Length: 117
Length: 115
Image 1: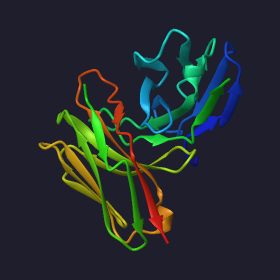
Image 2: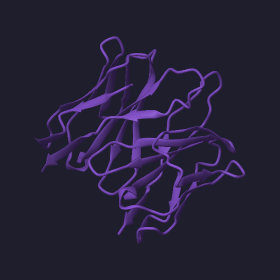
Image 3: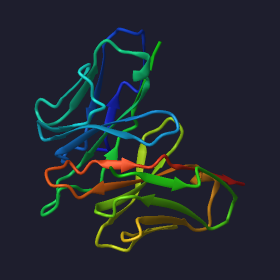
Image 4: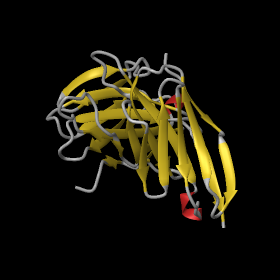
């Protein structure tokens, strides 16, 4: 396993369409995160899974956004009725829960860049 | 609310120079601090992770320090090379019960090393 994998790398869509991104984390990592990054800014936290449970969601994650991790392995992030303001890089990261600690080092994928026309 | 600031926003240096990138955070109750590198259009590559109990971490030509009480971290790059050109991001993970300990990022420092 060479790292966190995201698909597709680029997506161009028209406003109002639905899009779905997929993330495959590093195989032994039980924590998975989604972040969003706009040009010139650092990434912003969207949501987090521990195994298959979605344990935290940011206020940035509107009702049009839904994330799943059905079997505790890969995850999907769906955006319904896309808006131009959704244009951004969507980054997935994973980490391994360390014994006696609540987080370890985060490893990021290459990201999925969304452009909404 | 935690805020992370990185100064300068952009830096250009000649090859071979040693340089320091700065990161400050407003809430010193952090769990760890991580430095990342990001190339244009790419994802983030983890460089160094410093736990709150540590003062510094080193990896090759990189050295990161942490002063939790003053809310500061620095990333020192020795003998810079053109291949070091990228955006460097600092991120902190906070102490918060029940939290995912997600990272709060700065906006980054865009480094250009001139040959």
